[in-house]
Length: 480
Image (cartoon, rainbow, N blue to C red; front, side, top):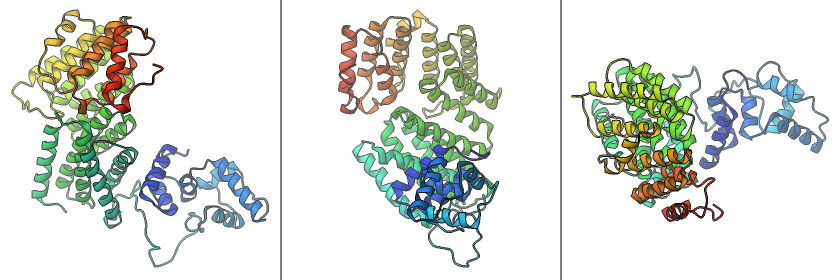
């Protein structure tokens, strides 16, 4: 892979989108070429999902079938041609055109001096092409179909593979239009109000319908961002896109799609970095620590939390308090008690200095409830018996927060050998979660407790039964 190129996974995602949207192979090639930073010649190979070896084998087979003689090509030569370190001979260009069912122009091996547009195109804004407009007319058909899908999913409440493919397609479209905007003040005010409403609703709404609503809103914001805007307008659009991307990432995390959650956090980071607001940039990183804590690497959680704290600066703010609290909880789980208590004390100090600031019950506002959530989780990992005993009588948490805390407690007990009590607490935690909120983030963590335990224990059998009852799709294999 040459310097500056995206990984093969990016091309694979374009192929998946192309299949969903029924693109032609040439449209797929253009998308990969524009997004991934590869030559057109290489984009033809990646558009078919071939390795360099497969491409050479296909070329040799073609020449044999059509009696064209043995091609003067190898894996090394193909790599050199694809990376513009060498140029194939005219006869070889003809063979490559036959292989990829294209011409030399579409292979990037000749210039096109035609005056016509050449038909329908997929326009992808690549590096250094920020002034190139996104053709919204070309996207209108896809957008209508996508919105219909989200509305249907909202009514049915059941996601499928197509749904998640369209969620990812929306993110790719946002990434392109971020690089590519005229909008009235009234439109911006309505957008701000809508984002604020979503942040309020998110505290109690299940992740699936919330994700559908946010995807529909993102489609609207993407249209507003379809051409370059004045800097003040662009900042407000980017800020809204950051918040909507964070809501999407958090919902996907709860639904268990960690790959897309990571990607949406990346989109939020790109939008916030374009805004340039340090506190907003800190918020994105602080929020992402949750995904890393529950599904990723504790060391990376600590690193990202510290990066967020550095960006947030010394002034008291929600991102600063959240980052310190997230660092404390991760350090506690890693067994660094001294550093964890220090970080927790710093989080408490930052939060104390926030008295008098807005404490609205919104997503991304670090309230007393959030401080309590992180404090309790940290003290559980530190083995604070008094705090653990007071969990059941501690009111004021959000919908799934009690379950997440109890699952933290169960995991802590399991790591210290008390599997029976761990399974009992996990079953109790799941019972407390409303069915529509009983998503992967709680179910997967409860399932993990069943590894390497005595299946005859009463609490183990009970937990297995609760998991099986949660949803037919979440029923455990009978071998567990």
